[in-house]
Image 1 (cartoon, helix red, strand yellow):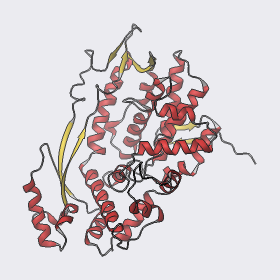
Image 2 (image 1 turned 180 degrees about the vertical axis):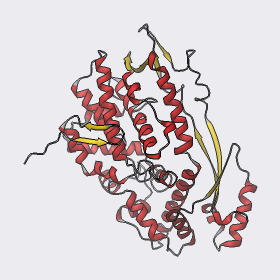
Image 3 (image 1 turned 90 degrees about the horizontal axis):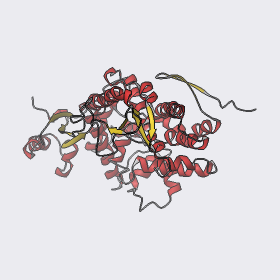
Length: 412
């Protein structure tokens, strides 16, 4: 019996969306892509915004939908995009996040420190390309920015790409933070190509201004919210402690996939087998991490058990933010309290109290700036170079410093 591959998805953000062709359906059906259903897009953000339970599977399909709309818009303005190039752009955006692990950014700062999710995505797509008889090759070239038409890569990865357009709208929808909502359809209609570069028609300028401001609001209100920051740092420390214990032969409950990453120090140089690594990585998802942490709540190691209980019961680090770095005396106060309350080694105090820094810049004009196509059609200008928009504030990096400590260490 033949399968109807002309599938329609009912997306809560965009409504009914249709897959562009049969091969896209086959890729979505692959176990590596289906794994994205088991990885939350926003990691631990649901501890602040309870609705933020959407997955990277949601996001990938949404970004694909926006790419189909962008391709239509650009082609309608007379720019040639062949069927092969169009399919390549779909592949690149659909699979751009396939290398994300569970709680990806926390994972990359704890037990998978040698390989970024961008590198993993390329490795996984190259393996998929073998399975699909080389049909993903143009998509890989676009994703790597090696394809001759550079604007196709910019649609996938730039300061105004389909990835950002989808995750901003989607994250707004699921968190309920409406301040970050953007007019993605308006922006897509304003996209154009000039000298092989992605540009925005001049009449779309204010939509771009709102896009950048919305991104700023989402970063400080959602992605870098102080409680989210606290939760992610607690998870990082849980995984670091687990890896430390595991590599010192302390008995520890894990799933087979998680034990591989606790036991090995992964880097591109020491991979014994890329195929083995990708096979194990493709089995690792949110459930491995959560399942292990639930068991670790009762572990004999006081550091691991205390942090695990904090994560499961949402007894997170207290966190203080300020614009200047915390001095050593701030940590000394809490270290003395640790000494009085727990019988642990001084070298383990950093699991209970520590300082750090977060930084964000909403727009980077020195990187690959957003370009505006002027109405006379013979020149472009960089966003912010005209009189309509001042991007100085939005392009200035903002640094904030934080101090985290267990709630038991707070003064009465």
